[in-house]
Amino acid sequence: KQEVTQIPAALSVPEGENLVLNCSFTDSAIYNLQWFRQDPGKGLTSLLLIQSSQREQTSGRLNASLDKSSGRSTLYIAASQPGDSATYLCAPYSNTGKLIFGQGTTLQVKP
Amino acid sequence: EAGVAQSPRYKIIEKRQSVAFWCNPISGHATLYWYQQILGQGPKLLIQFQNNGVVDDSQLPKDRFSAERLKGVDSTLKIQPAKLEDSAVYLCASSHGQGSEKLFFGSGTQLSVL
Image (cartoon, rainbow over all chains, first blue to last red; front, side, top):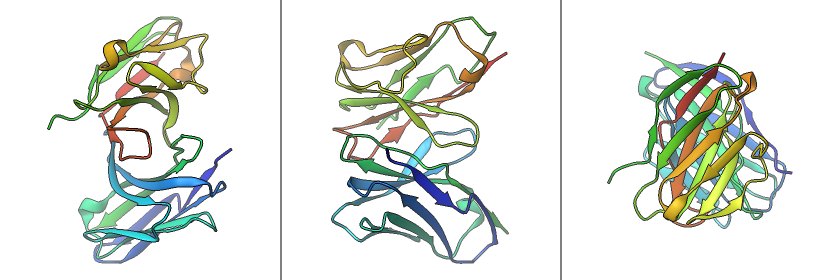
């Protein structure tokens, strides 16, 4: 059974800092891994999707890496802004056909 | 392009009552999902449809929850009777193909059971 852990659970940083969010998963047999953003009272928005054959994926100030063999993924946010404040969730898609979510990291970027 | 539409946005009911949620996925998306998100937790998959067939409903409490996707387009999720622990946000998502593709989520229905 896939279990997903995200560390830290919450993070507060001043504007402009670079930061790393961590995700670990127990079953390395995955097709891909997605990172999502969730704003309070809203649904989830897909940020990045990394295929199992890829090592990393970039979009703007976001960079996600994947080490499937060790069951780890990181989301790197460069030059953080107050608008980045949200909950970030990682979700590996297993080869049993399920997308399993972590509990998320709640990020607050202070002006 | 229109996103995933869900209604109602909020619902408050008493325990043992019934409730239904509606979802209209993005046009052309074959796969539709219902997730339950309890406060402070990540979403948990309840049921996955491929067109109008069920792919996975292993975590759906079938004694009280039911879902259908008639004609392979919109879907309804029903709870009857509701329990206090059903208080959560119910999220609908869709993808063009199987779940290995990017998922698009609706804004969710926030259910409070009193």
